[in-house]
Length: 201
Image (cartoon, rainbow, N blue to C red; front, top):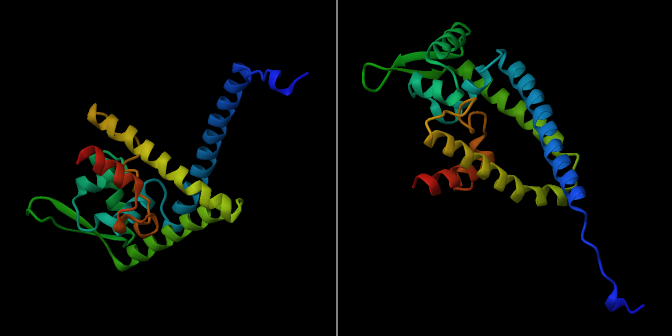
């Protein structure tokens, strides 16, 4: 038979669906497993569970001196929950309350002890992520970077859409545990920042 007359049948739709479903499920399993490991590791390094690790890193990276309400929003707590968290962190010598800029609000700042705890938390988080990426070859890691940038941009897009509808995304701000130097934010390379600037600018 002439090769030019050979008909190549398309892949059955059912197989495509199975592969797509499996890919999504693998992503879900990875997200849960990695999230659990990060939560346990950062809580241990901060010597405080729950949202304490997020609060310490957020105060270290971008919220230092901002109001209690800013902190509450960033880490996804109610006002009363944020007050209780700051009470615990203050009792541990990790933060201090100071008068806010307008004289009526209260700002939260890290102590030196709190700054060291935040740095330990960031280092512990980075170690978990670096160890996971160590399962890939250098070329695979390079190929993964633009895909991760697109996915972070897509997640940011979804969170912005939720806010436009008046729904605050669960957990607080996406960047609450981020190392800003590592993500390239000061250089304008953060995909979340780029997406937000494009949509809100």
